[in-house]
Image (cartoon, rainbow, N blue to C red; front, side):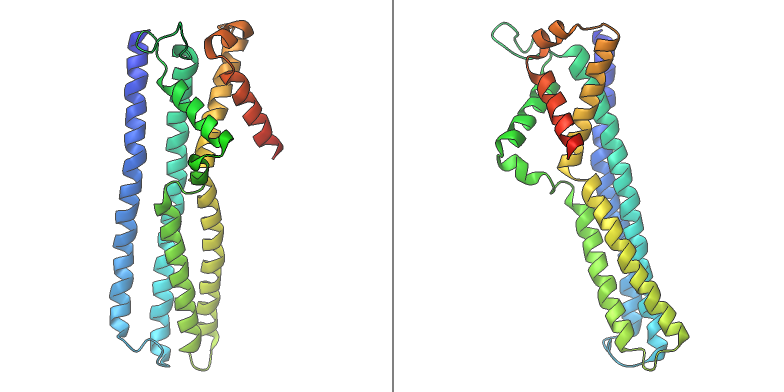
Length: 249
């Protein structure tokens, strides 16, 4: 049993490390892409608002590069979500089949309690409306901040493209239309990233996996309802109630 727990802990640590490394790699990749935009804008010079048809393709190319960076951020956010889902699944398995709620008779050290205690404290802070609740939507800011900055720059480039195009021909119109589509899709991507990287979604994943393994333990008769109550106190009922409330919302 201890050998399996050690293996699961090592696997969990690898997923957590990957989870954090993903953010650093994302920032480096996006900044590298943005450096290409600086090169393009450097070719234009300082007269950004000068009416010159020859400059408009460069504005469109710059906007395209920013949009590509938004796509990369979105894909990395999906990877972030998948990674979080994987280690929350492992953590839930450890919680249900190895841990026991601390009490007067159940002492930490002789029993494992970390994942269970951590989950219960987070749930209590959310329920009581403490400062932890304020962080429900401010987790992993790099994804949404970079997309937001890129979105603002696409909007600015679109405005510059419109005012520097002179008499708008079909090519200028198509480029401006492309920029508008970039803006619309970037807003959609930002909305999706806000949801997938929020603390609330992370906590929801934790609760869903916990309840999945609780139900599996009951279905396989590994625990009886009485054994779950004795081992986890009201933690099981609170998780079920949170999941039901989330489903209703």
